[in-house]
Image (cartoon, rainbow, N blue to C red; front, side, top):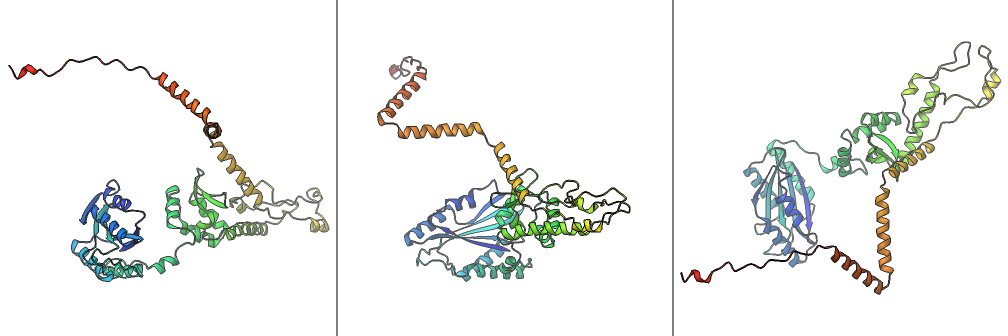
Length: 393
């Protein structure tokens, strides 16, 4: 069983809660009012106004794992009444929603008691409701849900449930748990997992972001990986340098009778954030040219030949920024932007023009609109439809 508690403010009103509980028939298969009515919510709001309280209603959402019978619901509501000392005089509304074949309940109770004008107890309400839910699960054989402390251990820092749901709607294959595990193994595993989920890294306004194949924003890359932004940048750069070092160490020795090196076949499968690699990029081209094949190169010349350092991600990120800017520029409607600029200029001109000019212009526009209307057709006179001689005859 899952219980969520929300306090409805008096300033916000109760209309939104009333629509959510009673009027959203298109989102629920069935809506059943078990106790109270819409007027109970307005009565609770009036009591909070008289008392001067900040909150008007306490809203509890009860979602059991199995269907609750009326008797089970009554016993559970009595346990809540005993725990919080609700009483029988407070205005309340209890509604049952059926969605996707499962039912859940909404309970809205006034914060202020109409008899004593005492406010409903709210001290440690989450812990107390969680205790009642765990007791109900034990008595009725339901699955014991994890506590708040246990859920907090598995929660990604900086990545809310709202962001996760939005990302899953944009990219159905998005799974932040797999991304975190892949990031713990290294940059290469993280990039491979992005490819399996149909995502790629690009540069956003505030740092690297994850986008879908179509270029739609999915989530911030560092939050999906469970890192801070600076740590994620360091993770990408150091991972890239480590792959370059490992790739150089895995090279095959020179062939007999030639000084050319054989490329590593495994290096072609590694995908980097900076884009595709050019052929022969890792070859050492600085220094004097190599001698004719078959002639061994002097040891002193080979020792002094410098190697090219690992390429930084800064040029690739700059390229991503330029591509993103060009993509946004192509999506911009210049005609609409011109119309808005002309409208804005007209509004500025109307504010700065003298009062007499403005009135003259408005009179001219009104006359022009009147002249554009077609004259109305004359109404033909009609004779009386009632005969006074009907009673005489």
